[in-house]
Length: 254
Image (cartoon, rainbow, N blue to C red; front, side, top):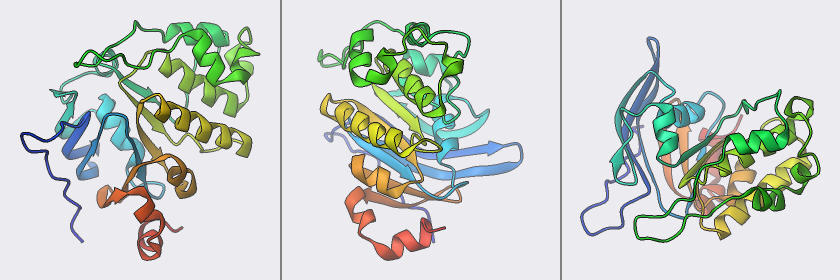
């Protein structure tokens, strides 16, 4: 089966917030991504779903410039990210929440949050991007508010996951990249992550979500992109994927 081709928007169409065309990525001699293409619209949640090893995390790393050998076209807010380093992508408003969290374990919760703080941003049309202050982040994650003075290294895995998301939000990103937010955390944290993403959607935040848990993705995503061995096998409405038994069995069942 050939990879699904996502058409490039034509003049006169709404320009996507993120447009990826023909993205290829390698780790050494091993090619992980094969002509991956997808778009993310402003205020939209797109889920990259697939089995372990499908290329989901590599896709996010390639977007951020964390994969040394990447090729293809990556347009973010109408400008190319192909030659951007990770810090340059972050400065442009791309927020990345890695699967392995990477918090500052020797700093407190509040110090971690302040380390990610960036000035408010606006859209090219002058509209304000959702702004995140300490108070707003603590309102979204009440558990973090109660432990603002705790060293991050003394937190549970789920608490660290919340902290990583909150710290990234403090950068007021145009687009938030979430890598496996439900992986390895308690069910109560998973429920809170669902609530958090739905609240972000209400605020107009755009998200690109990597997720193996189809049920989780179906609760929050507008559209889905199925990856299998680095190829896009499906691109379309999330609910259509959730209701397609044959497609789920072929590309998502263990």
